Image (cartoon, rainbow, N blue to C red):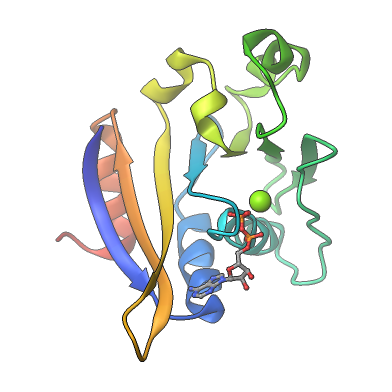
Length: 162
Ligand code: ADP
Ligand code: MG
């Protein structure tokens, strides 16, 4: 994994704006691996990205912790699968979700991606969230990284080269 971008998001509105910006640059076949501890901001980010991609702030985006997978349709017709692998034990459980068949034509948002099959990382954009508190301020630190070099140019196009 090579780090390609990092930023800080001082409040939830900043998280929503960051997600909406990324929503402009993703396409079918993309897998966003949303990493970070419980309460780090993975679902908040996914919710804002889905609402931006679906063109409506009214879309209900529950956490997929219990349903495991939630499906949405973006304005361009692309299906978005939002999944949370926290409760899954291993590769067999993940196979049962049927996401492998959807990967090529859809967008996948994966919380707790350390449970993903190893080969899924090859194309993934990893977005890691970490709360910080430096006395007066608290917010989220975000680190974006990928194995595939194609992501560097795409992220630069969205957020500017470092
Ligand atoms: P996860 O899915 O990683 O368990 P959630 O998205 O459910 O986390 O919860 C994240 C929490 O952090 C929410 O309470 C949300 O309001 C808060 N939050 C989101 N973005 C920021 C931010 N930039 N700064 C501070 N708090 C944030
Ligand atoms: Mg969550």
